Image (cartoon, rainbow, N blue to C red; front, side, top):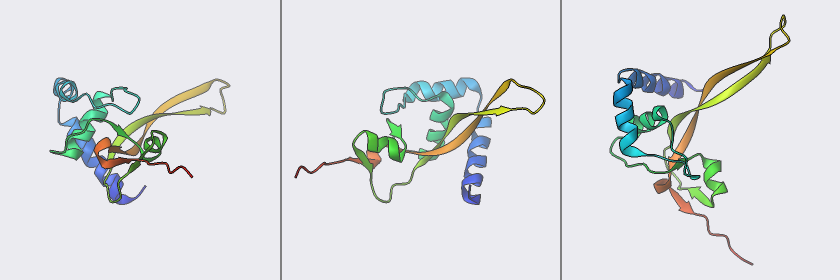
Length: 124
């Protein structure tokens, strides 16, 4: 991960820590940002998006490849937004035979539907 991305994540986490849970809930309740499948994003991710988007309204967000699966392409020059995506680390400890599932977060870039265009498939 490059230094700029690390710094951006650090600043976003600082902003998130500065507001309490009730304020987070109010932000998310007013927005209702979803993914293309219609699932509402977590309160945490909606707050992260608001911090980055400023006055730009967001409604449906997805990653580059996820948009392609929905026959859309990200417009050239579009700047994405970072969200936290949970991931599990299945590892075995040497002294134990049980698997330990550790959850951690990866920061992925998403784009709003307004930053995409419908993919036109040409029929030959």
